[in-house]
Length: 345
Image 1 (cartoon, rainbow, N blue to C red):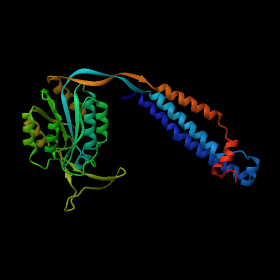
Image 2 (image 1 turned 90 degrees about the horizontal axis):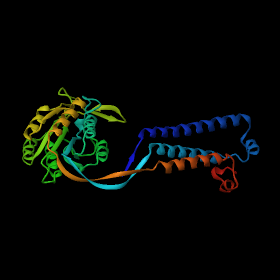
Image 3 (image 1 turned 135 degrees about the vertical axis):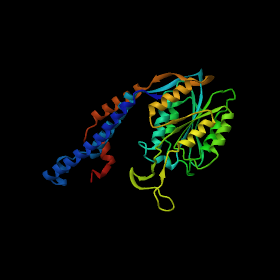
Image 4 (image 1 turned 180 degrees about the horizontal axis):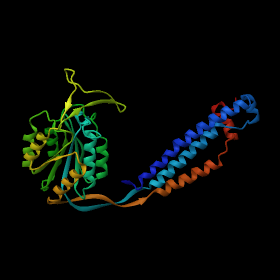
């Protein structure tokens, strides 16, 4: 297990393309200037030991130095002590709709990205609850089993997209069925399923399945993402809208937030519906719901001690800088024997 303490320092890596660009511009300027001064044969006689390869090597070493320096500033830490701790919390499963309708931009930036933001902010406000993630469209697919590893949960969440499931549609019933298999602890009294969707379920099974889940002690809360007025589904390439999804009659498809379906599902499972347009309100509502629930004690393994690793990368950075200083931009005996770039011809 590792941690990155100061991720903002990754911006230092932007120095590397700047160095490469300046080197290329310098070489072009030098070539043009030398070309005006003398021809290639005369330049070779005047400066026989000038080496292009050594110049490139110096730039590579300098870039490696800055890369190591950036990592040192970020300060990666490695977990060295794994402990078993007792926690109290609720088991929460997030079922995220990844159907094509979630690409509609009636809520910024689009429904799917808004859903990811909502789940991320909810996770950020959790204390010791266990979480799992399900992705669903025409079928449901497990993304992350019940865990206390919030960092992994957010990583899986960010990688979710509308192309991950080939079967299209919005099968909320399948998501509920899969979520029922996540709660494997018979003693867990508070089980929560949070469905984030636009509610466009094309089956009639979801309400019945929600009632069955409720009988097993699973409370379902639904979060509606989108606008009841609806919007078209853009078809993009490289971020540019090429067209909008059309039906078999050639008409532009308008997808709308179906709040009634989501409300009915939640009511059948002793939960409630929350409109997802305001992130702060959603997070506050979920927090209040969880705070009112009884917590179940469980054991979890976690790293309790982390050691800094920045010193290794700092040492490499200093070493590369020293190497760069002592590299001369002229040929040496070993370089002449290698004859890289046919420089001796």
